[in-house]
Length: 51
Length: 247
Length: 227
Image (cartoon, rainbow over the protein chains, first blue to last red):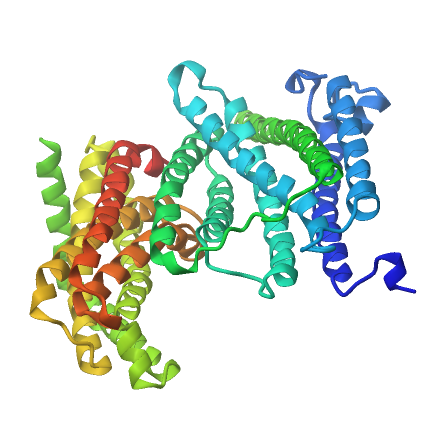
């Protein structure tokens, strides 16, 4: 049954590589945005020329 | 304390452009996962292993692009006419993102190697150069954290980045001559059919957009950190002056 | 004062300090010899040791070099001597070349000791036909290592946690020297049936490396040590 779903002994490797890649990027992005949110109130408007 | 609307507090480094970029890359990645994991067929020789390539190849390509951007931005900072701390921050943001992408590339590459070659690692020139780049840019990030004024940090790290960039060919060729017998092409030999190529293509586009989004935001966070540093210095100076006036 | 004269003065000063303090002879050289003995414990097989002797000589050189570089700049930053030199208007290029020369001299002593250790302890055989190649390898590799050591040592000198930062920065950078010098030394030794003609391309790599970091250091040293 597992074979019919396309599950093979390679599947764990594939899953892990996707989880590590996308998870790693997500953690990085999350921490970056959290940091931005934390320090933004202390930074004045003219120091954020993109707004 | 500056007056900020709730929206700009919630997304302090976001703009309309970055939001569009972010949504586009998110859509691209969902697409990549759906096609890469479910809708694309198994490869005739690599079987399911080919699915790793859909994220491995884009992340590897982005890691290299990130370091090229760091090199160019560093050169732009050192060049007097274009000297600006923005270049330095782009270099730093790009290196951070590059280290991230290179780290996940090494992991997904090892996993791919395990199921295609039966081994996690082989000392061919491409793999070794990649590992070398990874360690070197971790060192570069450490140099950025050495302290001093923003200008000192920028000059120092720009020089280190340029030296690292110039050394990459030396490493590549030394490793290539080191083990001439063990050469193994690390790119898939098999023929990818239309849907597979398309999935890979989607992956590259999605990761490129993601890279731009990450660097854009990270660079803005770095700008805020620098501004915060300056403010801290100003406050300290003002306090010191006030102390002096009291006496 | 010309840059060369500054360089010679600084090199002479560094070497004089080392001769008087005897840290190199009493601590660094014994450490290097100890590393060679430890390698023998780890690779407990005469055949293996003879085969990998060239690589171990260079590996031990690089580890001991970390200590030498720390020392070279601990001397400077202890009393703010590096800053004083700069304030006095001494050209950074001169400082860089001088400290590189002193470091190269110390490395050369270290390498000779390690080479002798390899011959005595690991039964490494040096053929006379490979002598020219061997000397050239040592000169080229030592020059490159001295430049890199001074460049990154100066960068890390003023920093907090420099003891841990230096290996992280320096070891990846000297990787091509490790590969190149090991292969060239193998060719000179005739290890694994290598002929000495195989060694010369590696000399080119080592020379290129030395030229890159020599130029880079001479141009950029001032910016790197600027506090």
